[in-house]
Image (cartoon, rainbow, N blue to C red; front, top):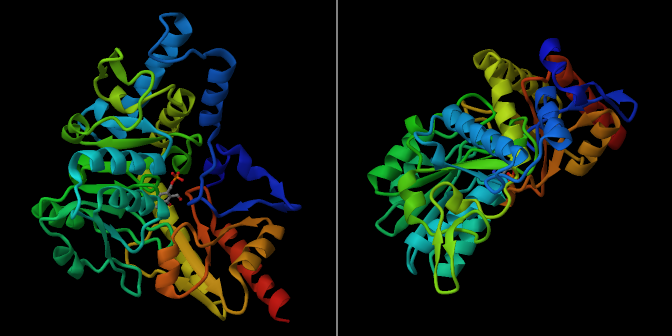
Length: 403
Ligand code: PLP
């Protein structure tokens, strides 16, 4: 782990006079030097707007942007590079589908299904769509342990259901959802599936063809790439049939005031100057991950999860939310008698960064009857020693507040 950590310059800092213990990886992950170098290189010595110029700078940037698309295609095993659309992140990808899919396929009286564990980014775009079209949002509920009520899924899907949107991994409960089973059931009912991969893509390989999902959205910044870029995988059939999401430069074939025709895929869905620096940075992040032993890193993350769960459970008055047998390296909790914001603030004074609040998932808070939670989320560069620092910090917080 010492070796891995040395790739991430930010991790060796001190915060508030203490060594930084960064446990907010589900919010955003830190960047390896390889990604920082690529972004710096582009800004310092290689910058030209893609797909437009025929000069050296533009052509080089275009080639590297398209190479990044191809790298993502291979990484998630999409069939075709033009099934990968660059976006600003997961939220942008979900909004793109909610708008364009909604325009094409959703009518008054139709239904869209989400789950009770979704991040707001995979709820609100569907609510907007339903409001626009007079459709209804249906919700697949959770069990107390934070798993989806799979027994309820078949009855939720009907001839009115146009799409099911579900997280790969819950950003609060850590639950890894049984996607293959969900997709099989949905497809048997003729319902396409969008997977929110924001908390899944960084924890081992996702194969969109094996999953069979129709849409898969993820964010670069959670997979060690720059902020403000992400990708949306969509099956060609849908991309062909859906109208453009946004209009502007690069997404057109010809424009006249009488009629505009649209560019071929994937450009039909990439209006305006793309974040090509971010996209090339995302390609570099994936190239970096490909040099590492994914299975070993995943095993280490699972070890951190087990150790943190055991260690935190020993703290009197601490409740962990989410105990699914398949969990990503996320531990959300509350400490009796201490507000979650105070927990995070005291930990910060000790150099330990955790998230606190509603975690962009208010329905999950409502499900567990709390106003918020604190959350520690681990990346492969975290250590068991950092879990100890978290647990010791929580003991200190308890003493400070309850004495
Ligand atoms: N979905 C899930 C499950 C998330 O955890 C997040 C971010 O935390 C998002 C969607 C939104 O990601 P972004 O803000 O990068 O668009």
